[in-house]
Amino acid sequence: MLPIIVMPLHDPNGIMFNHLKSITPKLKDIFGQAIVSITKETTQKQYQYASWLETQKFFRILSHKVDLTIGEDFLMLYAFAAACCQHDQILHLCFIDRVAFALQSNYSKVFIEDVQGVRQEDTPLIFRRSEKAWRSHPRNYFALEQMVTQVGKFLFGKELDFGWCHLALQAHRLKTILPFIQNRDLSMVAEMVLLLRDEIRSKDVDWLGWEDPYIYARNPTELKTEREQSKEEVRKRLSYVIPMLKLLYKAVC
Image 1 (spheres, helix red, strand yellow):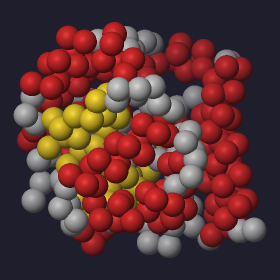
Image 2 (cartoon, one colour):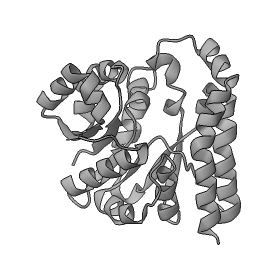
Image 3 (cartoon, rainbow, N blue to C red):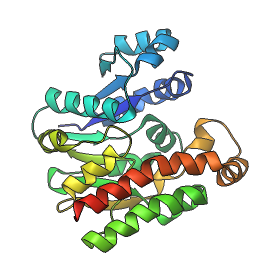
Image 4 (cartoon, one colour):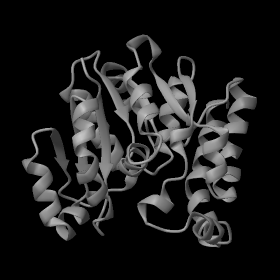
């Protein structure tokens, strides 16, 4: 049974759609189906792309009719995916930009091997950014997300990626944790890890290198410098790092 890929799609500017169309033939070779949510704003501003997606049998679409927070979008998508699939179906919860980078780079072969190599007994499994992958990211990204990882290590004795980019687990396990998730912002991904922390496994991978320079066709060094010097980028990271730290605090109180 081929795995199923599950990805949210918020793309009012149409950048991700171009990449998604490019990688769709490869996705069909790797996965049995793609389950995708589309935000209301994306459908309104990228109607032709959204209509194209609806015509592709490979995609199962959850089209939102109202504006949602990022956490609400993810929760509805994950609940939809869990309900659509057999209980032991392996789902790969991930993001279009990360997958597009992996499949359109020199990491394509190892990405495919890693995905196809996941067995039921391996799940839940986080594909975690390796040291090499983190070096490609802006330093402020690493420093702020590592705060959460290190606090989690002190509390639980495990090095967990609470801001994960790729999580593989069985549909029935996903279904069991969703009712316990309370946050409706991006920090809800950390709640998922907290609920799975006693059983979760991790695998460091290079294919989770920083995707933005490729996605936006920017010089990696220039873009990295811009992001490292940006206070707005720090505020953006703190907007989910602080709620994640609060979750860890509550978990041990």
